[in-house]
Image 1 (spheres, rainbow, N blue to C red):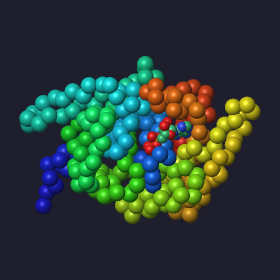
Image 2: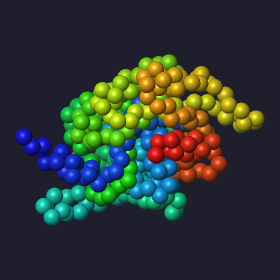
Image 3: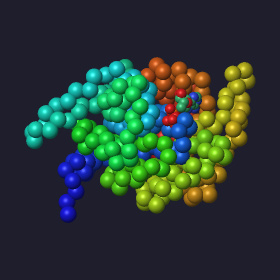
Image 4: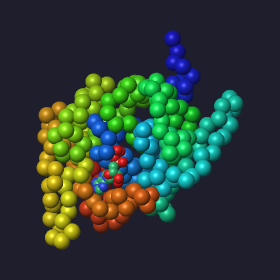
Length: 270
Ligand code: ADP
């Protein structure tokens, strides 16, 4: 039995993506999208060709974080009569290679909630993979919805992921859910699974010292317990919010502690 045409298209396209990395979190609000966007920008800053798919159907803010939320998504007609969407790009005034971005947010008005059942979410994500003219990429980053839902399982089965980066904050409650996401990726036999701890600590504006608001080290302990890599911690940086509102990933702001932390994580990953 052959795969359905959409899955077949995804299979053809993913041949041209060297590394496919999913970014996940056990729960929302831990900075999953921030990590996905900065991972993409850091890789593009190093000269790699990067595409990022905002598959977080419930809070699609990747496009805004990358400054392409107002872009018009054009479509082109393929030889077989189908239309494919052309992903908007941003190169941050030449600071990076052009990053290709596709998001459900482009297709649904800002003020409309997406209230779909799992199967529809899965279909939508698969279309954003298979009906978009992504071309050849060194890295395809997928910002998944938070949690361990069905759509993640199904899409992971289709996409042969090379790595999964699980984002957590240091608090106990977040860590419990993070363990579930780590185990899901291990069960799906993703070859490389790693944990990133976001909002690890705060930099004191007066002395530059580190303040551990939520207690540090939880992400590392969890990674050790689950037998996966710990890629590092990212501080709470007041510029991070400013950056995401400005559509400029913090990793492109020179000499911030967060930018350094992101670059170190990416150096470990590649
Ligand atoms: P998620 O994708 O997990 O829901 P987001 O990446 O959207 O989380 O982040 C939630 C909010 O927290 C955003 O407003 C973002 O700018 C902010 N944020 C994330 N990481 C940091 C950080 N390290 N320092 C400061 N603010 C952050």
